[in-house]
Length: 143
Image 1: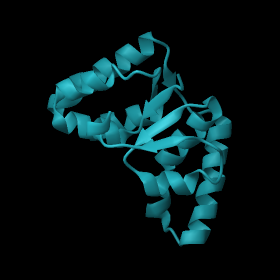
Image 2 (image 1 turned 180 degrees about the horizontal axis):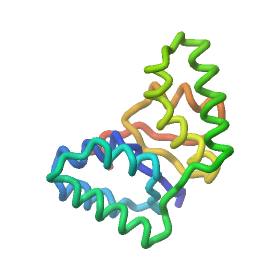
Image 3 (image 1 turned 45 degrees about the vertical axis):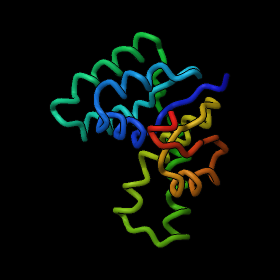
Image 4 (image 1 turned 60 degrees about the horizontal axis):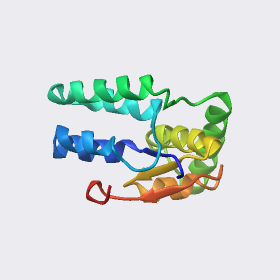
């Protein structure tokens, strides 16, 4: 079965639905990976009451050796892709900054052949032009 990773949009929806929803996500049928970029986004935006759930995710994925960390090539590809998108869509620095994390997730997942599960179709569709990667648009209820 194709390995997958959830974008932060999926985890955020699960956290809002309650701790139990996050635990259910970890039982996904395919081999599940956690992006270090998603982990950073979760820690940066987590409410105090959800911090333990994020810490458990980190611990479990670290123990399973399934945390995906962008390498130099991913950073380079992300930067080049963001420059093209900025020129094409007139993104200001704020727009580029918002896309940086998604670009890093996309480039590293593409390098490893991992499918991204996300609620963010627009940005991942645009990023796919710079490195082939698979993604599926889902909502927490679909997982």
